[in-house]
Image (cartoon, rainbow, N blue to C red; front, top):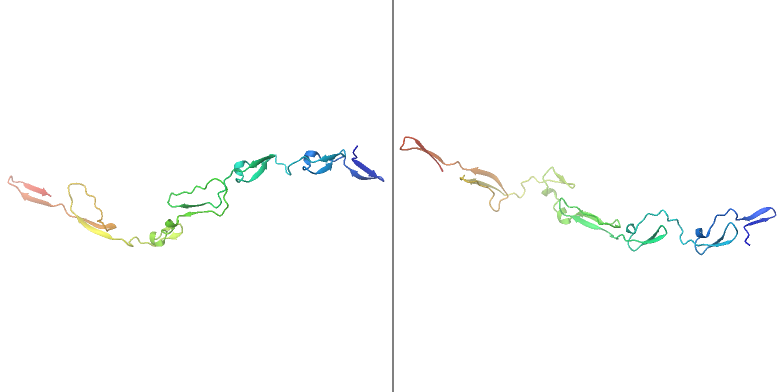
Length: 191
């Protein structure tokens, strides 16, 4: 018979009668006494109530383990470490891969494209990605002025090889002559 209450000289020395300890609440390997004074051997294999846990394997880093509602869960989230990427076009987008990132990764404009972002490559008064342009538009330009003679078919006038653009196009007048003819009229020649 176990003793749950000890009174000595009118004074209560031990009183277990109001205790609520049970074997499932005491960690495995430890002992205590219940309200009836009987020895209790712990049966609990966890030290926290995980009944409201919501983590899933995909939310736990691969190779790591955790407990969810008293079940051991092995993570499946990919460890991407330091994720890096570049953007090389105006419409370029970098999609960050799903998984864990250690916070040291970077996404940047490709270095070949960064080297083009200099003031001399941007028209004056325009700022692109913090670089204000200084180009007037004529640097390195090689214009061509040319003359053409109209024809009876459509013509496309473009600069000759070695020129950047046409600075001026002079279209000759269409040859036009009038002469008297033997019928008493005027003959108009357009050629």
